[in-house]
Length: 224
Image (cartoon, one colour):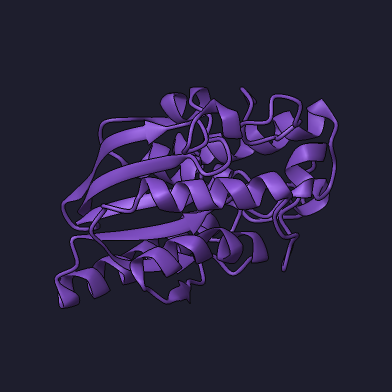
């Protein structure tokens, strides 16, 4: 099956550079709404058979235009929500952001015992994300769906793909940003593994939908 992992559109927290991971989270900015609509148009001819979002507001809003275009209900999927920042929640300073990103990419490198300050460790993150993607793959196989789209979050997508795609690694994931509505496309399944098809780090719809002034921790060249 083909798996499209789509980052949500821009949020107020992205503009301010906040580590904003708590539920239910903010909605989208005006630019974020336009990004979501452009993303839907760009995937108009993709044979998407199922559409999922995380439990947070911003992913449901981002998925809505794609659902309307493909006449699909957006299924809320527990497990693909953003990696919780714990004690770093809502902080904007560079040291906190480096600590957050350094932690999540260490998980992709296999250091699963490392824990986010007052937050989860790598075992917890991969446990929930793997289980969610397994559900998506199982449903796709049962219904013979060619592709499924999951609207999730920047750090979560980069960390999971950096570990689970067999032709990339944690260093690739750390170097390659995922701007709002960026897409990581994979092919395969949980049993045979996942092959990276493409990693579109820029907003779908082009740089006209980018915001170079935003301090987005998961985009704009942020590094651990």
